Structures are given as structure tokens and as C-alpha cells.
Image 1 (cartoon, rainbow, N blue to C red):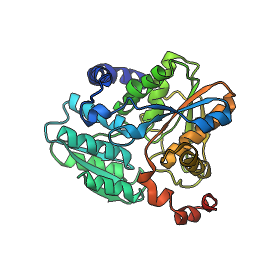
Image 2: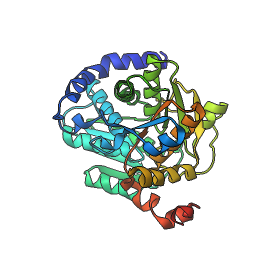
Image 3: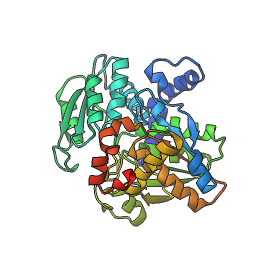
Image 4: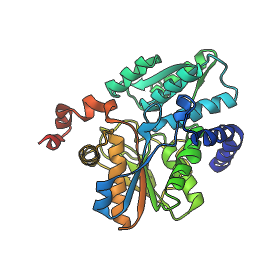
Length: 354
């Protein structure tokens, strides 16, 4: 059974009934709790980079989701998928391995829906994310950052823990195609509707691959000429895989969190990729400070990377085109890392404070 067949089956069997509810409730002024705040985020024109390129560079404001990031979309779909499959009973436990944002999204949803939540997270992630997860009452397991092949990898530990307790499910965000469907059925249609179909390219970074692949698959069904451009940080293999067919890391470990991969996830398999860009930390961090100083948006490094990539795509297309990306979350989740003069100077980016 190929990936496209699995995607169609999941869409028809597990997810679509929930989408009909979302579509009807999204037109109401009153949202239905925090789950009603998933998706339908504003699409914002970034004025300065649009002027600079002669294009319309638009960004979905994903920090407007109830849990504060783009990962709320996947979190909601992963839970609803588990419910529909009968993997969860009332009071059950959601278990996930995450760099933070999916875990935060799941924790918010679990509080609203009456589930427990257990999160395994690399201990290299920002203190702000760890503190937020503790505040949300999850059972938190910070573990050393090791390769996926190591049995102590955070995802491997999450899977084993879910198997060891009753009424629990490992939501498996990296390979569970419900993640991709979240963006095929919400983010992609929103972009198409909000641009009235006038979109020439989309560009997103890839962590699990759900946002990039889901949006690209939906939009290319509407118009195959829309370009889907992958944006990758240093230390990831995804850029080299799509450009050169090699699973080789490009560059060193990145300041970004939650994006970049050492493998091609289930959600990225079958993704429609027109081009891939390697975006340096310098470009990403510079754009973070530009977005703050020029546009007033306080965002994290993955958002900076997305917009830096969108600018490069816009320049390659030429004036008059429309390029869409997203602002993934807020800078508050990385404050002591990304907005620290000491930390940035340590990484060779002290010029930002010169």
C-alpha cells in the first residue's frame, strides 16, 4: 500500500468528520474552547520584505493557535486520529517524543479533552519550553539528545513508555500521517482561500515534515504550477536528500529548534518538492531581528528561517509573485537562547548587538 493510498484512507476514515465540524465552527464568532482555536490563523503581509523583493510575501500567524504554535494543528489531529481508531478511552494518556511545540500543543488539548499527557524531550531544548510543559502538568521526561538509532532516543523512549502502561497511545508525530493530513485539510485550504488561489510558491522548514508535505500536496492538487520549496537548517540531511539524493548532514548543529532531521520521516515520504534551500543560522537570526525591528513580530528562529527562505524564493521568481510561509511560534519560547547577547556571541552572531 503506497503513501498516497494510505493518506486517502486516513482522510476518508479517520479525520474528515472532525473537519466538517471545524469548517462550520470556524465561521462563528465564538470558538468552541481551545480546540476551536486550532487553525484559521491570520495570513499577514510582511511589508518590508515584500517591498524589498517586489513580491507579496505572506505568512500564516501560527502563534495565534490556542497553544501558541503551528504544532497545535498536528496535536489536535493526532489525538482525534487515536480516538477514532479506538486507541484511547476516557482518562487515557497521550505520549509523544517532541522538541517541545507538539508537546505543548498536546498538553493544552489533553487538559481540555480530559486526557493525561507524558512528554519525552531532548534536554537540549530551551528552558522556556521545559518550564511551559511543567506548568501544563505533563509527566515530563527530559533525556539526553542521541541519534534515533540509539534505544535512549527520546522517540524510542516515548514509544516504549506508551507500550508499558494501560490506556495510553504513542502519537508518533514523525511518521503518523494524521500530522500531514492536518495541513492538507486545514493549512493548505486556508492559504488557497485567503489568497483567492493567487499563490505562486510556498516555503516551509521541515521537522516532522507535516506542514511542508501537507500544504504542498493540497495546493498542488489545486494548481500543479505552485512551487513547494523546502527550507532546511544546518545539521539536517533533508536538504542534501532532495538536492543530491544523499542522507548527509549539511553543516553543523543549528540554533533553531524543532526543525531539521537526520532521516526522511513518514510524513515527508512522497512529499512534492520543487526545490530545497539550505538556510544558515546567520540568515535565520538576522531575519528574526528584522521581523522584530521592521514588522514588530517577536518570533523564534524557525520563523526567521521560513521568512529568509521566502525572500530567497521571491527574488528567484522575480517581482509580482506571491510567496507564502508561516511564523511558527513566538520568541518567548527561546528568549534566553535566541535573544541573549552572550549566547549569540558564543555562536559567532555578536554583530546583531554591535
